[in-house]
Image (cartoon, rainbow, N blue to C red):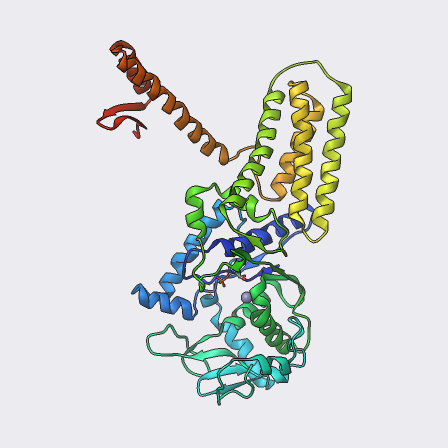
Length: 453
Ligand code: AMP
Ligand code: ZN
């Protein structure tokens, strides 16, 4: 699989996160089904936006690109996105790009004008086959500035002549840098070869990025198929509008992670089929938190029962649990086999959790059936990238619970002080201090905090 990765001039936003999480889920499901997956996701680390941002921040654009590559890995890890088999960077593949561009010039699919190189779209007969557009439509609809140097208004840059102060590399056409589309051709061919299985990205990449990738790659390969399947995720939206850096209606994943565990964000992103738009708001995120919490609680309660020794066994319930585990796996696979319907796959998990909860109440000791059901729930949750046995969310729940308990403690202490029961008031303070929780009296009332050393 080759998936178009981020342009590294900022932290990635929640919309980008949707794309990374969706393809990570697809990859994990293939692995579950026994496929060996070679997964390539690039970094576009040189581009107009990176250069602009570098100038703005008075930072070398290539260093800026590297900075956000490092940041990508932190957020990706928080969302439990597996590292790709290869994460190639555009700037490390310039010679490969030059070789392909030269090949295209040699067969007259590309031409050079004064240090720039363009791809000649009307020389590739399949142009438009992915997006279903014809060159005629495109010409009519195009608001492309008329550029006298281009043979056709839709011709796109493979190589851009260097402008002063920009990063540039040596090439047969002088100093310059690659266009965006050619990067993905060079890196996918290098790491996967021609005719690989799946090429993915967000829906905005169908045209022109992927259309152009096909044209230049299949042109270069003299008609050989570039990728067999193309998959595109729908957008994450805000008020039904695409979340994007250019509309400035985005939240970075980093910002979201300050308030939400990564697993909750992931659960939210996979709760809608990847080809349907998904609207971002606090309510939806809150529902995801509850949903994931239900699965985690179920696993936890089952674990408590499993840890208890006991011999009583209800055969009927045992059979029910084995059956529920089997059925959950079948419904899960059926949903995922139908174009990776993770939303429907969730339903299978909830159903299984429900049966387990019923059992826990009836018969809370170890049983083969419960172990099977819990194991299945953990395994299938893991296929979607959730570690249900070790939830990060519980930490947040615990913190919230502690805050509530401490509020009550402070009220009790305040009441004892009103009654001038200093002995009780001091006892409460000292007892908590011994546990590392400091209670302080301030003019605004008592406060508490946890000793940090
Ligand atoms: P960019 O860094 O803008 O090149 O985007 C990286 C990836 O995220 C591309 O595959 C985009 O198609 C995808 N993407 C960008 N915005 C969104 C969005 N709002 N929802 C889903 N995917 C998006
Ligand atoms: Zn790409």
